[in-house]
Image 1: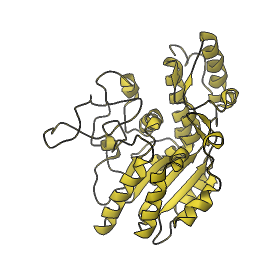
Image 2: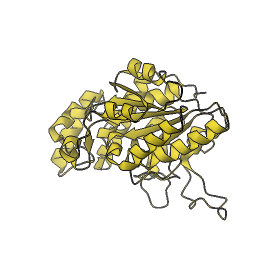
Image 3: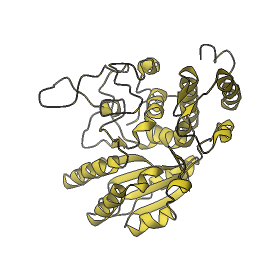
Length: 311
């Protein structure tokens, strides 16, 4: 099921970008470009694709209660915002933990988390961390260093397949994770074991912490390489909702499905092109720079001056 809301997927995508924009302006920095590239795919997953139950955690996030262990019954994981891990429901793993802010905004937009949840962002003792961990909203496991998420999710998918559970396993990844050997080992293992109940959406925005990926470690023909490892691969426009829908429904028996969502790190916020390729984390060097960006992006996002008060 999906929680009932009166927003279209397009409206949710815009809402994600606006919320991340507001947060970035208010806090003098943030993972802004990830909202540009990921908004459509996350909006579609949460609003149309994922089969999730009612959240099992309160809409206002709980404080951190320690790491999960047999001696800590109060510990929890952020997967509670995706509902119970019942056989009929999907599981959703977020691999790039630095997308946490975008995930939080998506959860708010679809009604799984309270509007005020971001008031707890990056505060001491809070579970709403800047870099998500297993207790952060929407996060089921700790996935930094990058590339660990797919391996953990594939193990869950393998177990669910053995148990004949109907729910699928979905994974959200960044393209930079294909620079890690663990990703390719996992692809080979999934193909070998015919794990076909897993669906992977990759945000191919071609940027990373040190700049453009092509200048750090070029991936070449990524789709061809993924297919060579035995997976079904669909390379699409990651901002085209119908293309995303079609790809999500194109799995083949006996193969994992990898969707390469080719995106722009300044989609909907073209002013950010001035910073390209230094877009991994947007921080301002001066008040003037912040005000210039705020004014330009507010116009692009349809945000009025009154809405910007207090930002």
